[in-house]
Image (cartoon, rainbow, N blue to C red; front, side, top):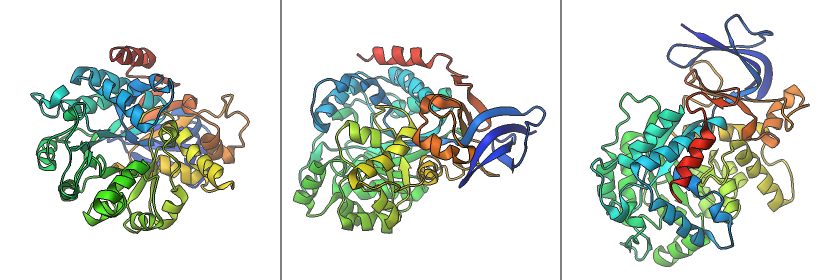
Length: 451
């Protein structure tokens, strides 16, 4: 059996078309896309507004959502912010992490996100003791995504050192970081290999190198080989801070990008997150290897990290995706326009990315970076994951229909999302989450428990 969703307007890349019927089969895939359907067919679910492919949040740390507001007091740097982050991480258990992530992923669904890449390094109990299930924290995230009705790529993260010390070894983890560390990347690989996707259709398991600070050079290859053997996504925080670059140059005589390239980490399945402080040679290495770039503009500006060279990276051949990272806000429309507007401020010129290019970064290229290559497009055979943005809110009213994509990217916000469909199932309908009726209360309860 099929079910039909009728979109008043739909973005069929690269144009917006009126009256589009999306037929969804029993497997949760788009069976057909019918254009020029002027009125809803009998029995169809009506989607008023602009329907887009589901959005992919390619970089998330779910527990950072508990930092919202508390880290806006006073001044400081990324490194002082990190101390506050550690204090929240110290209080999480599998149960409280599930409650928080469930609410955070529901907030994402309300914002049109259908898949999240969870950069997961909070593995063990405080002090580093292993849970009876060594993947209890990861399983809590997987269950939370299922509860919230979205897909997840669990990017299980190797984090074994506190910083760069020498060519062979890193600084031992501090007392906060002990719960992040498996000791070695070999022990990391043994643990993460116990995670199984199985018949859980909403799950992909990938890998991550936290950073060149947290994984000594001689251990980088272990993570890269684990991902390569499985054809899994591999992500890495890259050159987010100039201090990381300086330390890497001092210890290894090369930039973090060059170090990763030397150890086989770069490549078409790899995504560098942030890629902020790069040399021209770094950009050429990233683009030439097909390594992706995940920009997180709202976090990068919140932490005063800087503005990454997104246009240069794209020109060099690096696909761009977007993430909300620390969840200063959860709004992929804001991430998309910020990538363009940041570049306008830096260059004092306009029009570096089209609305279509920004939507692609927020959807198809984000899904591809997370291992969901069959999502992110409104086309036959694709996963039936899509979201609808209102065109009659105070932010979007009056839009010329053929320019609805421009309005969505440059004026809409997460609160304008009216519908989110995942695998053909209505998860958010008329702005309300169908599985978690009171997301705000769930967030308040989960966050309050950690303070």
